Image (cartoon, rainbow, N blue to C red):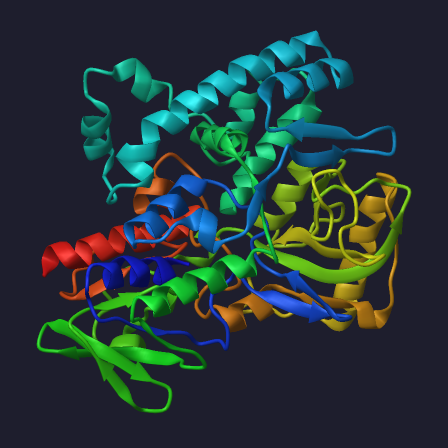
Length: 482
């Protein structure tokens, strides 16, 4: 997504761009798999921060609303902890507040009202000063916000964990689970990530959209926009290193041995792939993320199945019975949790929770896992066990699946490492643990002249809109340095 965004912005300014893609399709992690005749998204499934894409397409002389079919969701997600009922969170705050009051109690509903106000304040403070701007250090961020606005800076709550902060709003631990889960959107634990990540709740309230044809269709639309602007898009083309002459990056070396040269090189893969071998044994211009610093990986199953006993919505979460144990297993013991939280995206369900295609559900089922894919591969027997505990968590919440061995495809951290080398299977780069984590992601400009970075492992962070913003920021930096 970063490479596509940068290519669009550069080409719209009249710059010649060649975009290299290792896979046969555009989008990187935004990929789809074919299962039992159905195309199912196997990467990101939630589309937010539409303003990023409105800006990107608008600046290029197009319109996102015309290029990409989409509709806004009224229901953000459906949640269950057991088989005693489901709880829906809505885009409309008042509707969500009423639902919390009915499902939980008035005290939690009042806490939700305060939580929403604080989450909005954090988002509005950081939208232009951090997310859509070049990477600042803490002092620079304070200067952008305004040194005279100390209360605003403190309200970002960088020194409190998300889990601890949620206790100030929600007496019920189930709601702390629900909103704590937003830390996993950036591959992190709510018990270690800063409370600043409350802003993700506001991002979803601003709008979650369904993309016609699935999320991969967004990547295809961005590729089409880039090529319409003159970008040369080369698929099945794997880079094997950066060509450096003198003290500057002058091109890319391919696996085939061919070199492609240009004025600047923008790298959008995981930054941990950038070891000295990538630069012909020269020192890498960036530091790799240590294994213990990596964000979450996942084990996923793309499934076509008949479902019963639970009314699936598009986005569904079946919560673990022991949330602290889940993250302790992953980050401390490097194990798949015995009782994982399960996310299910039922991709052929509409906003009324009705099937819009076929008579079976087309699902991405996901559990979090440690990012050790470069040192460990789970066996087929392990995956069968993990699938069993995943289905058992769903069953405890009322959902039953009927599937066959031919109707699902499993992906584990070692597979993600193969797709995205250097990551260990981490899907979000560095974990956002501790108040300094967001400042430790590299910015677009590196110490090597003419060599730049973008993507989910760089500033401003992981996720579809953030990676897209990183590409836009990198394009601006390249143009400014010309």
